[in-house]
View 1: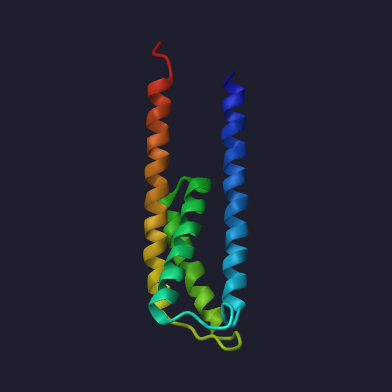
View 2 (view 1 turned 30 degrees about the vertical axis):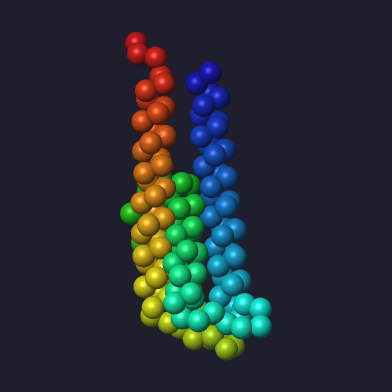
Length: 131
């Protein structure tokens, strides 16, 4: 019985890692696109999309690693490199406000995942029989 729970935790962690890498690839792909459809997003919406994208990334990475502080730092660096990459992409520019929105989104995503992990651990501990 103990072995089954270890396997489910391991496979769950692997799933979160795979989802994290896929999301990083999607973010990279979106960064290389000149525009979304026929029009590019206006600034407040563009910043919101950046924040949401890195909220998801930090959430996935925190679920995979169970380390919210490390996750926030990593997603912040990834966002910085993404902005640098955009400065070389056609019709794109690096934008400090996008990076700032990514910082905020990354922070919220890592904290949200940490809260869920704590809740799951609390529920797991209350369901285990006392010896």
